[in-house]
Image 1: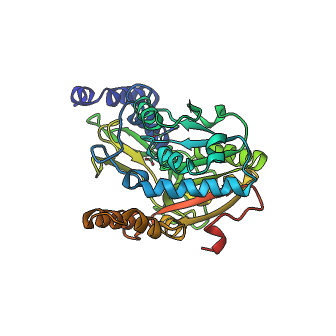
Image 2 (image 1 turned 120 degrees about the horizontal axis):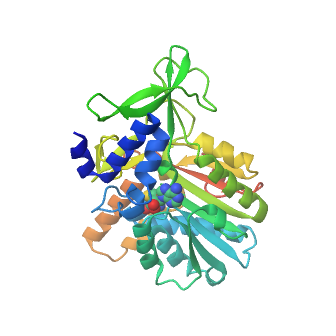
Image 3 (image 1 turned 90 degrees about the horizontal axis):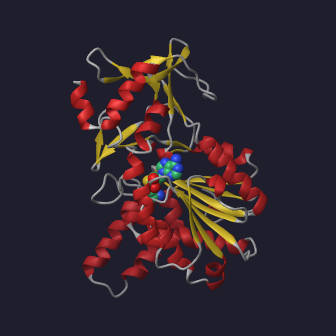
Length: 364
Ligand code: SAH
């Protein structure tokens, strides 16, 4: 059995050796190995996004997503006096499509285009190559970073789409009035299996019942703290878009996806995408603690429609064929319909205190 697994994926063999040596690992360690192992991690070497990959993201559905995000960022920059220098930052930029769409919109504002430096925070080498190619047509200064920490000081306009869901979570399970941590070990046949170990959450909500699962994402909080303290200090804004829940709650949301289908999170480590829902309340608390103001979360569909998604689709479709117009309508549905990405995906905005960005000022 072992030999089979080791030839299937070198990472499976390494993970078994680690578990045999150190004992079971928690879900966060499993996710970190599977996604970010320097040689065989899912995001390190592959190009998972797109029709030929494992999953599709909003910017890969339609250019309209990036255009609306770009217009929002430019609006927030103008509201803050159009500073002559700004860092446009993206966390986890995938194939670079979203940033390219933002920069194309930014060309319409000569002052913004002259002021902007792009900073891509990306750990994957193959994706970084795709990003470099996507941004090649744009002449502004561009830099790549392993983390937010090396992005230079200055006003800071940031977008993160489907970044936080890829950061590792820990899972805790309520059992007979106390907490245990969900772990991954090996069964008698030497295969990966779920089990329990000691551990309790940092900040679990009240009212957990027997069997409830609670997830925490320790790596997300320092990122939120860093971006919000920089926005509070130097000005700027951030949009965090991801799938998840507005209120902290219970549930096992760990999921594996391969070729657009759900997969077993314990099978083929390093070869399937692993994510978990984002707890937006936890992100918002961390941003407020960093000194910034938070707005939302608002459902993605509502955010995009209030900012003119429908009108944008009509304008793009003007004078085009019936088939092209139908494709645009189906993109709008994909991005905004409650049955698709419209409700599950949420948007959280972070700004300096005192600002009321659209469309959050209309109330949600
Ligand atoms: N934002 C893109 C891609 C989302 S996929 C889009 O909307 O299409 C997740 C992205 O986050 C990938 O680019 C992945 O390589 C990157 N990523 C995952 N973990 C990361 C980490 N810890 N630091 C930086 N980038 C990370």
